[in-house]
Image 1: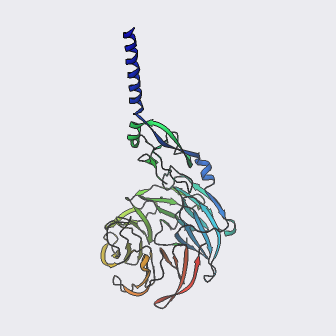
Image 2: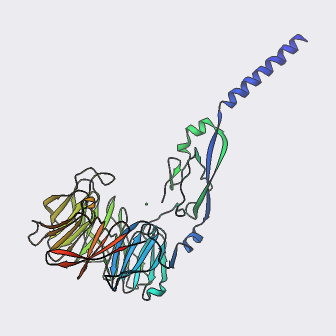
Image 3: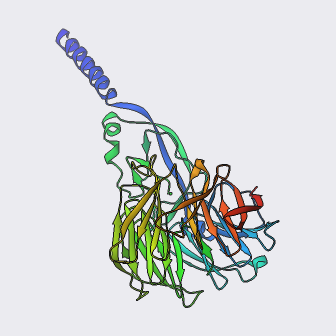
Length: 421
């Protein structure tokens, strides 16, 4: 009897110890699961035309006929009637989720919507119509989620049931769950979905455009640069663009500019020159390498003007304005560097060169003796991101502000300031 009692005690103690050991293998964690909707439903509501709305974050600008089109980063395009530059009017908003760029030919507006190419008929601005949407035509961008949805803080992101190619994240549900400690320690290896990294989701970054443009129309072709490729579209049928073969350029591609039969493509590592004598098949002529920096480009005659903005996410080199001789497109050569503070966009008009130098304001140069530049004016109170020199006026976009100036001899004179609110 005593032996039986001792055996029972031993079994009870062993079981208790085993339970404690087992409990030590578990803990309580915050687990987030995405709430989703179908991608088809999301895209059906991704575009719309509405009455004017307040701008959130001003981006690229584009001028076409008597209108100015201003990108609202990732949201769409504000349509400004500029028939009277003294009194511009905000007349419509084209809602395009995931939009950053725009280009127009013969009343057809081309824009990006995440990785899709969308086409609008703007022949009647009072009744803008969607003509076409080419899915993943620019790049394949899966893992969408609705604007404003933020990633919650959690220990686990349970995405195994999320079909990132066919669903959109509309929100998150977070719950406390008991999980193995070892699973928590190894959680960064559990997720194989390309839309996620380190176990946590990543948010998805003809008229005349500015130097920061990624879209460029040349005759019957639309050229679009994404982060690594030059995308080519045949737009001879404006309502039904044809996707042609992409051309791989490299990484961190940012801007595109055209002169004659050449495309000048700016990237964080250099400027690339492509021959478009055969427009459907651009071929590389040469490249000009520099240190890592943000790099918009404009070209006029034998010279290319490149602003390099160093610091922050743009790179480690010092900011400057580079003047590059491109008389021989196969062998660009650096002529001179002018120091800058934090340059963004730039533009050329006749003998004028306009440089948006961030917090240092707008700088106006005489480039008639290029590569030697003469500073004509420095407007320290004008802080803008990009400029478009038109035949009679100069358009500039700042933080929710559109400025217009006219040329007066060797200076510019203010016409209007339009606040986008």
